[in-house]
Length: 307
Ligand code: PBG
Image (cartoon, rainbow, N blue to C red; front, top):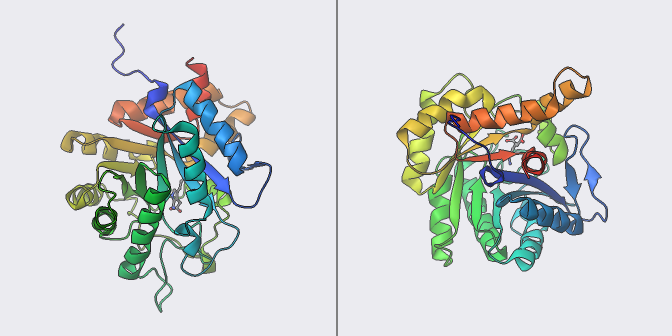
């Protein structure tokens, strides 16, 4: 009766992986219960999520061929584009389709942009690629594109490209405060990404030590045209979620990332934690801190338990 916060399947966005050229879904070892889906198994998974009341999915693609620019990311026949088409056919307007917009799953070097001479992403050259990806994803049926590469000016560039192509109704969920965390490890297994030369993303993702700077990133993304902003990861950054909630009035999403999910599973496998109870507590805390939407690999399991 006195609960201030309640969870509902509506709060969740399920992150899903779809891999080109496979017939059977491949389990992801470091993300128990998660798969690299085939086109067919993705369709089945999304049908089940919809029946459970989960309103949205975010898609990540694993292409057969990677190159220096990540060109499969904007190929109209690229894996995410064809998967978006499948899901649009299956669900019409009854499922919100979000496409992660980045090139790291598609580049042979694993960075989120095209590289300059020093081996770091060239910010402005990368924006041109993101513009093409946004239009390809919107054309394929994405309701929302979610730029996750943390290039400066990406939201503005994508907004303009979408508007110019007639997609003024396509929304942008900006990964605004995305930290250079150690918690993305299992995700990189899921999408077969290794950053060459032992590199990292500290040049473009947020410094773990900084919260004020994250607020500045959020303000900038909103000024550039973001319709929703994201904080990522979630639990170590509840302070950032709460600050954002106090300052902004557009929807705030939080991404309970692969490492957060994997930790709970690893401890539960040893009998050290109770999986479902911790999954509920994590997601409830993220909502309590101020997130309207939670991207979590627990979306399906928690929604099943809430039926
Ligand atoms: C980049 C991207 C990453 C995640 C989502 N989008 C990885 C990264 O920045 O290295 C991580 C998600 C997770 O760990 O669950 N396209």
